[in-house]
View 1: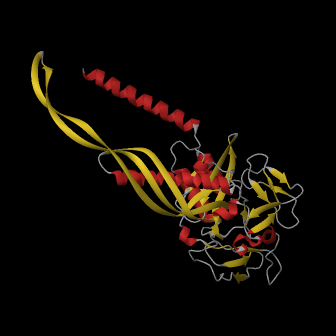
View 2: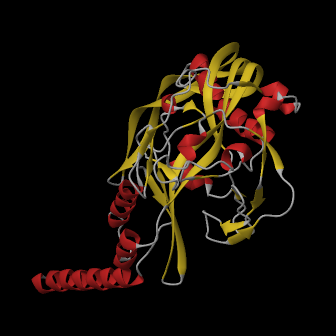
View 3: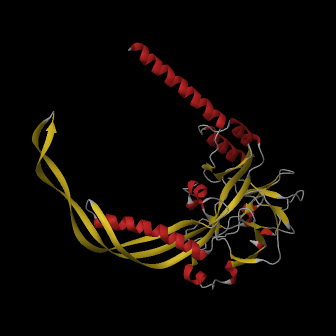
Amino acid sequence: MAEDAQQRWPCEECGADLRYVPGQTELRCDHCGHVQAIPEAPQARTRALGELDLDQALRHDLPAANIEETRSTPCPSCGALVEFSGATHATECPFCGTPVAIGTGSHRQIKPQALIPFALDEETARSAMTKWLGKLWFAPGGLVEYARKGRAMSGIYVPYWTFDAATRSRYHGQRGDYYYETRTVTVNVNGKSEQREERVRHTRWTPVTGWVSRVFDDVLVLASQSLPRSHTDALAPWDLSALTAYNPDFLAGFSAEGYTVGLADGQTIAREEMAARIERDVRADIGGDEQQVDQVNTAYSAETFKHVLLPVWLAAYKYGGKSYRFVVNGQTGKVKGERPWSKWKIAVTVVVVAVVVAVVVYFIQTQQ
């Protein structure tokens, strides 16, 4: 994103920087209020948003138009690939606040083909986060209040890969069908032996072989290592039908992280997800009451991918000597964060429970 990142979005009226307005298709000047429309790309909102040939990319043979030079450096604390725009040479990591300075040289990366623009503004994202915090049992009330009034949240476009593939899988396994037999058993009832009949379940196993096919579309893989995968996975689902052709205007006033999970590693993760889905298909095809899957051999074809950017609001707070990070899906408002605990609330609850138990025990004893 070097070429795009180095451009500015000057206001036509006063020359100040314009900012993308979440949920709209316009840029707005915070200084004078001037509004400027974002023109829609001719190929926007189509299902063929910049799909690229996966095998060609893995051979490092993509056309030059799909590659860009970026000025970036990894954060020494969290590993995020921090990108620099214009003449900027030093900044803060948006993920952890660590000061970073750019080194020499640049990096060649695959350009984003598409993005989902921010639909929620910072105020709405903060409201969703504080509401989520307020619902947590034993969360420090001070943290909730601090989060409500604390430092500004960072709006960041996080990098992802999407993978498409057609698969055909040959499997070997066994189908298990239940059947029942009746047998007589001896049981002890009140010191006396009695004979009873009971049904016993058995499983009849039959070797099976077959084929299953599936077409995968937009298998989503996080291309960043700066946030815990548990956090970003919790932000799903994303409505990928809202993907629009990449337009740097949507980045005005926001940050974009470079990918740190390469395409080959992303493909490995995607195939693991595909394999899990294929195994479910195999079990359904085997049928019966139980299944054993011994071997699955899958052939992949028509493999394509996209590099996309998805909107995330990020907040990081230090409270009580500890750091807490929270992420908000910039499309849906779904929240995930590091679970805070209030020792004071826990201690009070323990005391209250102990008192209630003591009262109940005392009441029971007095009634005897």
